[in-house]
Image 1 (cartoon, helix red, strand yellow):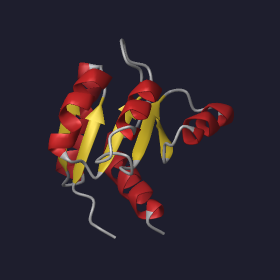
Image 2 (image 1 turned 90 degrees about the vertical axis):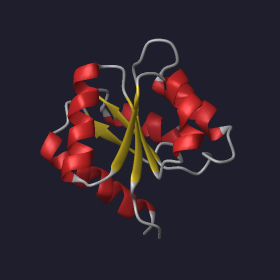
Image 3 (image 1 turned 90 degrees about the horizontal axis):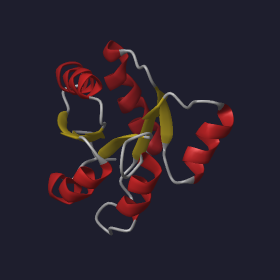
Image 4 (image 1 turned 30 degrees about the vertical axis):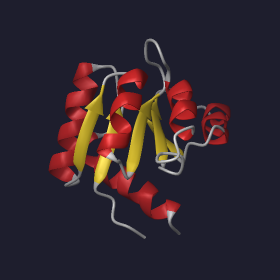
Length: 128
């Protein structure tokens, strides 16, 4: 198992971007790149080479599921774990996101002091 170091966070809300970046960098010690849209993530992901991608579901333009599908078409990113971050956490919604290939779902709003631990736990689970 490799170590989780680089996290790509795709989120369109500036306030959530700021909180997530601080939480993941300061608390988790990760290297974080923020993208504001699915299109921006597709342009930046291969160069950033993330270990994990956190992906908002509801974004203008390319939404999270469409972004995930496009990421999976790229060989370098086809196996990168993706976790959706969303307020849509009804059991059938979570099951649908997982059926699309997401590792899991982190509910929004998230607890900033717990976000890094949640991400690390999902990372660890993906390699059990």
